[in-house]
Length: 284
Image (cartoon, rainbow, N blue to C red; front, side, top):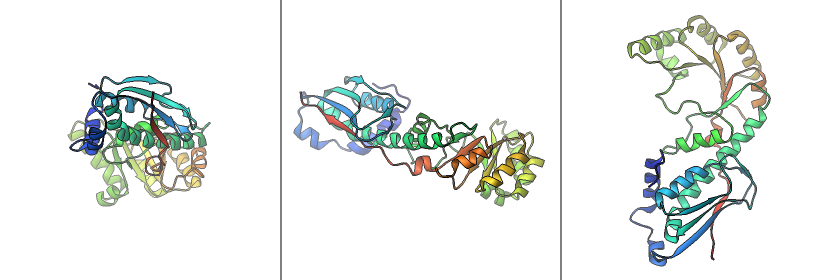
């Protein structure tokens, strides 16, 4: 049985597809019929989800034999063979769609992430993802970003305090939410990185004045590259700097050249197009 840390996800995904059983396969393919299939690339990109797919097929049927030709983060071209599986034909047919859906989605994200990373090559800026992910599939999408050369931001609401515009507006302003955060962390004996979003230079000035000893990173939201350059100069190394909002392939380098430490891009996960892959049955 698979020991993958994603076992619960595999159970959920397979149950969604399998329901009361793959009645087509059960009706047409005998339990003792052997099978073999090869995963093929049908378009160019960055490969992601190989290990996850192999772990999934191990969950479906631990007796399946595997031959691995390419790995996560490899650049692929149409026609490349990724891996081959042999064993029960029923097992291959049952696991095929879930594994392909996962790999196609992950490879699409890794491919798009790679394009963004190439745009900021040679700068100090690190590319980050966001929480704009598919419910139940976040770990896979964030893993795909990492495979594509990006880095992961927070995984959820629990592993970082990220004070955004709505928190500031409902919490009484920049100074008020910083003081409230200090008290909350102390009262609950928590040690979490604290990041705060600013929309104007006035908010940035308030943060610079009151954030020391509490805030770790400033998130510059929906600013122009020129405004970001000015903001980075004002921050002057007191805090890490991050930019978000309106970032595209066409302008990301301008933001990186403004000197920020991080750029977060929601499009990495919510705009990626799945890469075309197929699991081709081999008749021997």
